[in-house]
Length: 162
Image (cartoon, rainbow, N blue to C red; front, side, top):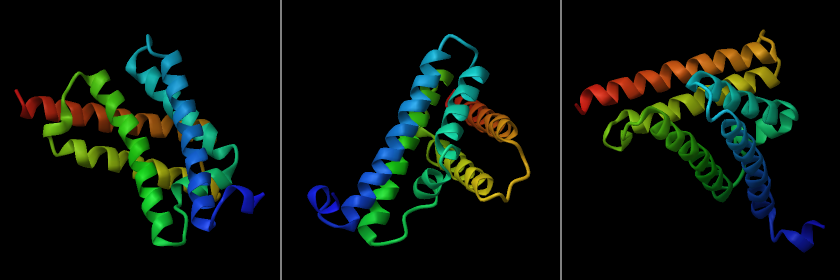
């Protein structure tokens, strides 16, 4: 099977990361679409819950997507590109929700990396058993942090540009 579908280990690693990232993207977008008429807090919780469930249901998925794939420079480059793609989905939704053009503000560069990096670390700690919270507590905590960061970044960006 490997030799029929993948030319080398880099191709296999890229396909694995792509599959996991697509599952995360699809689950979170579906969750947000279902909650689109709800307040922002419920939309955020739906997205975070879908993200967490998709990754902690099989901890290997969390480790591959969020822990990075140790290996070649090509694998690392691909992993960074995939994570930037997932971050772009978050940024686009935030722009819509907050009705703010963040592109001109430095927070547009820093806040998403902060949210994604912190979320990744929290999920990795959870699947490794280093976190003493339940899955619901993880979702609630991440949701709160996403909202604080997103709402705060939007408020600062709006104040700077008005």
